Image 1 (cartoon, rainbow, N blue to C red):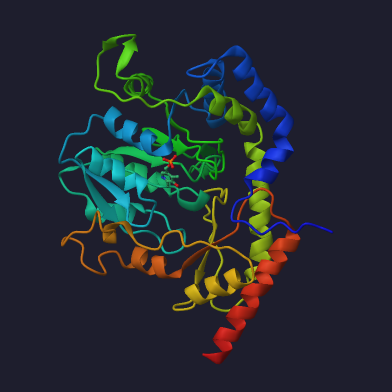
Image 2 (tube, helix red, strand yellow; image 1 turned 30 degrees about the vertical axis):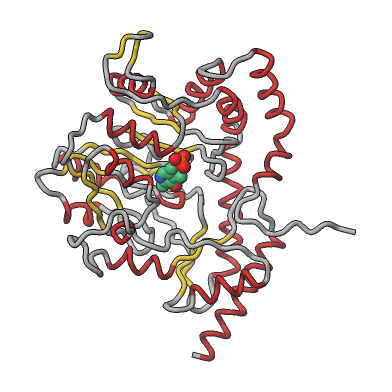
Length: 384
Ligand SMILES: *Cc1c(COP(=O)(O)O)cnc(C)c1O
């Protein structure tokens, strides 16, 4: 009898079995050396990632949310300072702003790429704005050149949230590619297991090309000390475990191949879904490569939840990233932001649907998913 594996949003188990001998060996090395905190692999991984991203400094930390918090601490922002973030994103980006006593200010996004744009950011800049956090959502870069110009002319720091786009590259006006997370002042990322470069627990990192800032970030992540027991800054304890660094050192060598596997899976979905009525397949921007952290459809008004239920009934998982815009979350809503404050973000929350996406997808499974979607949408639109 053939055991049929259920279809999953993300398949980390199969990927592990493909890399098992190298990963097991790296883990064993840490155990044999009794190397648990700030060990050999942490230094090696920081160097390897700096080389991969072509950036001068990488500082690892405990998770992606900490990376964002450390970045804002490193910039020395003060309570009351405003930081602009997309209204359509994961909550972590906004959370750390509020935690530090800063004020999150939302901006609407582009309806095709789902990303922040310079035009939308410009509308919400005030004299108190000190920084902007572009989130490279779902695996492709925000259009950074206009945003960096806007930030420069308004004296804003730029912190890139690269948690979903590690390995993606931005196309500069001269045609050269530059890694996501290395264009602004600081880039932040997460190594949460389901991210494109994931470890087997929590992990995160910051990157910068500014040496003094890099040193400050390293100190803040380590209780504000440069020298043991001399605390020059108020810091936190945010470390990447040596075991996780060992796993990441192995997996980083495969990140290019992982991105290609995701791109191939996305191309198969595009092929299978492009002519289905009532669907919009992901838009690939000209200024960025796409590493498909998510493959996210836009579904015609009112049909999204029905499509999700139809897929689920046939054993196909799908997810709504994200169902509620940040300005309407209970913890963040305020009378400053009535309904329709950010119409694009609000509409996207009703329309988006992310399909299974990972490095182990095959054309049989994707063919099944596409035909289920085709059947449902064609029938719904015919009967409307
Ligand atoms: C995952 C994620 C984070 C947070 O990362 P953690 O490691 O889970 O703290 C932040 N921003 C975005 C956009 C993310 O997707």
